[in-house]
Image (cartoon, rainbow, N blue to C red):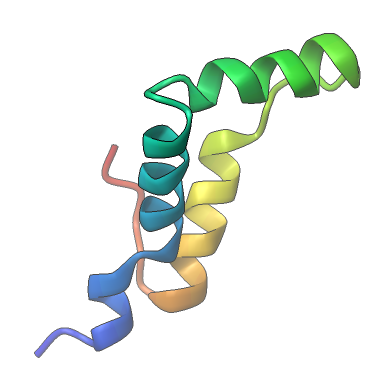
Length: 64
């Protein structure tokens, strides 16, 4: 039986929520803020999603 936390995948939920709030442009706005305004190399969207998914599911492997 799968653990309940592995069904939640907090990072995927957050990414879906941000996509809904920004009308599908969350990666664009994250890139503009992180790279253009703050000078980072990337927005870190995928790293954040994977890290948050591992918080709720220790055995999580990136499937995207």
